[in-house]
Each structure stands twice: as structure tokens, then as C-alpha cells.
Image 1: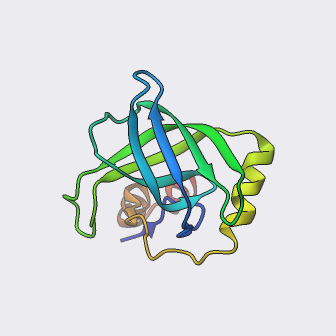
Image 2: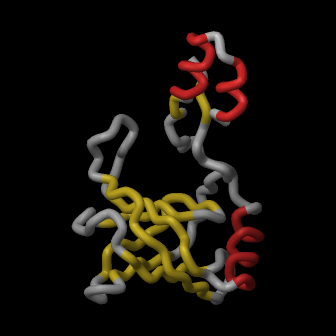
Length: 143
């Protein structure tokens, strides 16, 4: 069985303030950053929102008074049901953030260790079928 990971960037445990607001209702959905990557955030939240809901985010650059803002979309509502979920929260994918703010975010992350959180490895079903069928030409196109 061929396994691959979906995550392109490491997530970092960056202790800082973070606020997530619903763009539709203007309601506070979450606060308290769990971890961050250049692609998204995991924040503490009440889980009372839907996947794909657009949100506004604001987070403070650690050890500074600077706040950066952006827009994201809810990719996962963490309800504590999966093995390893120790809290309720929201997994967010960053959609818009100006270049300077994203650069500040990435530079800040480098000062904090990667987390132990990992996405589960996915199964490469197309690769498996190609190997079983003995058709290596299919294998090259499955990647």
C-alpha cells in the first residue's frame, strides 16, 4: 500500500492571541491559536459553525504589538470525536492575507517548534491499482 501525506508545510505551536469572526454573522467563532502554518490555522472554538464558512482572522505577531489580519474558510470543525482531538476548535485554510502580513507570519513561525500534529496519511489508491494490475504506465500518471 502506498501512503502519501497531504500537508505541504509543518505546523508550529505559536503562542499568541488570535480571534476568528464569522463574515456572515459577525459572531465570534474562536480564539486561542493551537498551531499555525503558512496555509492555515487551528484555533480553539465552540464548533457551532459549518464547514466552508468564510471567516475573518486577526492574530498578534508574537512578542510584538502588531496584529495581522486575513480571510480564511473553515475546513474542519473539531468536535473532539477523532482520536487525538483533545479540544473543540476550527481548522482554517487561509484564503487572503497581504504579502507583508504573510511574511511576518512565516518569519514568526520559525521561532517556534513544529507540533506533533500531523494529517493522517492518505492512501494512493490509483498507485495501488497500477501495481496490482502490473501496469507501470498507469503509475506515472497517478502521482
